[in-house]
Length: 286
Ligand SMILES: Nc1ncnc2c1ncn2[C@@H]1O[C@H](COP(=O)(O)OP(=O)(O)O)[C@@H](O)[C@H]1O
Ligand SMILES: CC(=O)N[C@@H](CCC(=O)OP(=O)(O)O)C(=O)O
Image (spheres, protein in one colour):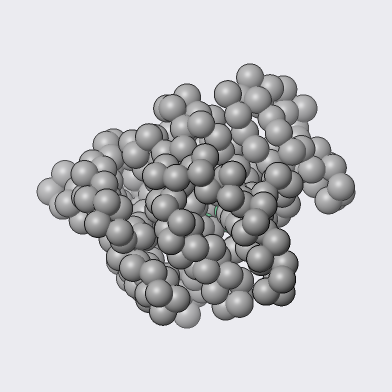
């Protein structure tokens, strides 16, 4: 955790950034692996409340993959993934909705406990995220996994303008009110694009994109979207990092100015990224 003096130092350094980003929207994807420790959760929420206080508009889109897997295990249900997406039958969908709903309200309450005004929503509220069925990587049926069809940002815009910090769970709604389980990275990217956000920040459990996954010092600080295909061809990007980078590229192509993959295990990583010259993770730029 930062000492009060360190925080004050960051605030002084932050002034030009506060001016630069005043009134802008920043979408934060808060991932399951980055939300396990309660001190870290508190630090992330403090950063969001501070951002809102100085006139920048954070929007949280959260995951909860590890918690969903944990609850399914308690119920005796095994989790299966195809290309990083959870195979979602009817019972799994029910559990996904319940677990994400609980996490959603917990995040909103944490924000409220710190003096912010958090409001928890799911993609089903006011058709915020409409979805269609998504097939697996080999075009197989993976159940009620959704692909974002459309984002209807007007509810978000209203609550943002009223001074709230929206917290969105990645459950979409399809035809006939069917719930769909949407990967939170994709939901965050689609929401950032629809809101014409200035930044998309993806918090995860690693320093950023590493040239060599076994060497923390090999962090790639900035990468242009045209250079991503070379990283993929060289096998640098693997597993869960592939959809994250894809989401960054989609958001940039959709008009978001910059996207960042940050280590959610570092206290105040959002503050350090947005409000200082240092920039601690990987920035993906046009
Ligand atoms: N080049 C890379 N640099 C860093 N991490 C990578 C890279 N390629 C693959 N990864 C993996 O991607 C993981 C992050 O994705 P994921 O586990 O899906 O995160 P989250 O749970 O936060 O959504 C890292 O923990 C790491 O194992
Ligand atoms: C379709 C799909 O895989 N959905 C995810 C939704 C939660 C999520 O994305 O959580 P993280 O960001 O913590 O991984 C799941 O069921 O785990």
